[in-house]
Amino acid sequence: MATILRKKQAQYQAYYDSVSLSDMAMSERALPREWIAPGGTDVTDDFIRYAAPLLGDRWPEAPLENGLARFARLNISLIGQKCPEYIPQRLRTAD
Image (cartoon, rainbow, N blue to C red):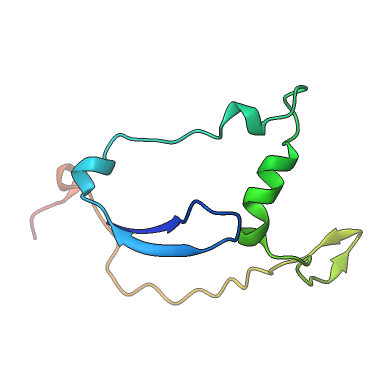
């Protein structure tokens, strides 16, 4: 499995590597408790410093609609049915 890892230094720097899927299966990493503010509903400055290079230094530009940012609009376009209607085996009749 391809991975993107962060070098352990003050300046953000990523490097790419790979790891065996058997090493990754059934594994997880949790956000360190020391990065969660005492009230439990915010993060600490240490987390902000860690995440800042991943998030960038400016807000995304998105138009506002009714006071909310509109990042995308779903354009639903359907095509005509190409396959015959499915009939379960038990309901089929012999022709």
